[in-house]
Image (cartoon, rainbow, N blue to C red; front, side, top):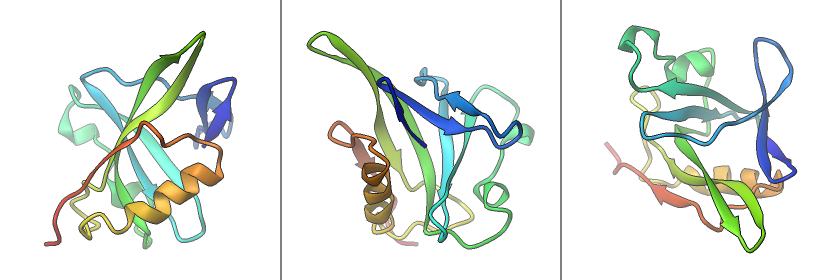
Length: 130
């Protein structure tokens, strides 16, 4: 993931090509995992589709351990004369990789910042430890 001309970009895992990540509507979000080798693997999740087509966090990570997993939402915002896309919400909602009360979101946020992705407008949400 990264930023190009104010737009969030990522690598499509099937085509291995760079793609623009689209801002989310009320009916979708991105499901993601952050792996120990520093990769952020994501998939657009259309909440209106059959649950049978949902790609689980464990599938994104090929069953391997992760640092963190959850959902994120991209929003488009205007600042002065520029329009940019930012991550508006990040959570640790995962059924397979049990949430740790938000602690895992800290290294994930750091990774986003290292990639040049602004997190100034990002709202965090987490589940309590189970």
